[in-house]
Image: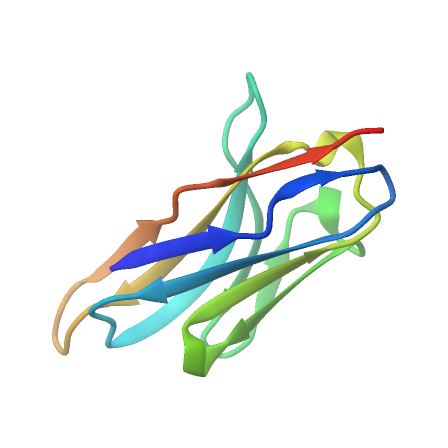
Length: 120
């Protein structure tokens, strides 16, 4: 299973970016997908997650500014980031919790990370 993230970049404060992450390979069922981020010198933190039923959760710091969505048919998760702040600068990692085959174990997978820089 591979997770391919894209959409990072440099944006001015107040701007927007949309991250995408597509899961590919041997996938039977995806239970949840989400995004974490890690800023220099800080621990990795959960940004947002979405379950197979569509339930979402967000870090307090991004509530009202970020939205998360899924395209089930494409095994893809999106993170729409609006009103970006300099403190949102970090490497963003996508993750998926899934079962790769019938009767197989529940496992989590990580993408390679994409840099988001918010600066004027």
